[in-house]
Every structure is written in C-alpha cells, then in structure tokens.
Image 1: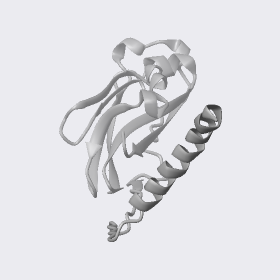
Image 2: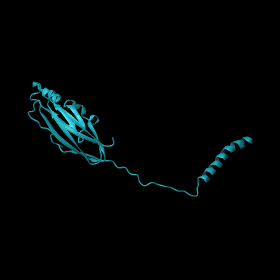
Image 3: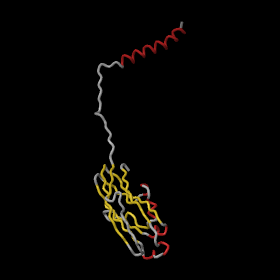
Image 4: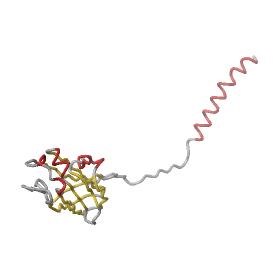
Length: 174
C-alpha cells in the first residue's frame, strides 16, 4: 500500500499544481497598450552638373606653357550625402603624364593637384576626391585648371591627344 501511495503522490501533485496555475492565470482584469504605426522612409539622391553630356575642355593645338580653366557646378538635391569627384583619363601615355591639373572646390579647398595620369587613381567612389558633406539642396562649384608645363617640351608628345571624363557621385548614409 505504501508503494501505491508513493506512486499516486506524483500524479496528484501534478494535478493540484495544474489547477493552481489555471486558477492563478485567470485574472479578473486585463489591459493592452499599442503604439501608433511605425513608418520608415528612404532618402533620395539627385545630382546634376552644368556640363552634363558636354565636354569641359576642348583644347586644340596646345603647346608647352599653355593653360586653361573651367568651372563645373554640381547641384545636389536630396536628404544629405557625401559627394566625391572621380575621373577616367585616357589617351597617349606621354601627354597624359605631362598634363597637369589643379582642381579646387567652391571654398578654395584643393580637391586634386597632379598629373592627368595620376588622376586615374581616383576612378571609383571609394578613391574619389574631395569628400564634401552636403545637406539637402546644395551646390558645389569645381574650378578645374589644366596646364602643359614648359618642361614638357618633348617631341614625343607632339600631335598626341588625351581625354578625361569627370564624374561626381553622391552617396547618402555614409
């Protein structure tokens, strides 16, 4: 009989504890609270320049000692971003190495100074030049000056050509 009582104790204990949990979890009052609907909106990025689809320079018959300048204004519309300038130079290696560029921004900060050849190192956003933080609706003017130094008096660069595409990329959230 003792064995029977011991064996019956476990199921009886489980039954009693189950009834206690069931009675305790049946509250007389309940309340719930909710927030308003949460929303998420993405920002926007729009970038234009005043030379879009046009050449910046078209210098023919240049010779050592010649220079040229142009301004390119980049307009940004969006929710704040970083703008970087990139370039992709091409052409005869001798002339690409000899041509020098000096690029400054609206505030006179140096963006780039060096050869057209070395500009190739800045062809992606990651290696871009002049990381400018913008707010919504802003403009930056880039002053681009090229020169062919007197020291470039080399018959190897005669009747050669070089070119470069200048680009600006804006990325938000960086």
